[in-house]
Image (tube, rainbow, N blue to C red; front, side):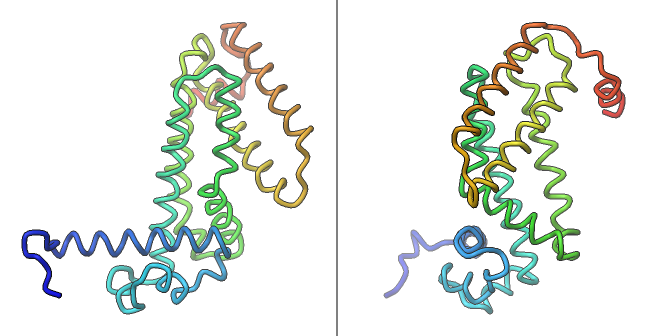
Length: 213
């Protein structure tokens, strides 16, 4: 069947579409069967793209994985930005949900794989740096934190994300819902108490964070 010339895509559009399909398939494959089983053949089959097509657009499987990691970071950030300026309790609950989202599980897979894969670790490091720098910036946006030192807000925000990330990994093997709920309640109460003080935290560590920025 001849393609209608009025709807025919440009080469750039076809390239972008193929790359997007490969990135989506990479994310889907890692989420479902893990990083090490996400072979080029499996990814291509899911994307509906030949291996030749993959290597026309990416120099290697690793290059595709890194591009997928970039996309995972963008989607993670979109999830965090969607939290908005909700009350602290709601924001923490939503942050925990974001940590448990399937897209974040892909990020966990890549981080764990990078621990023993030097090449992946080297390529993933700048992606992680950009992602967590952006999360740090988001931590100081909510107006509910007014009066608290920005460095402390960033420290709390990053620490909470790491805590919920660790919880999300562990609960796949050893879920402890009562402890998880108590942890969320305690974190909410602690942050509300800190914000209520509306003063800078007199910590040398936090002052050092401010000086390093």
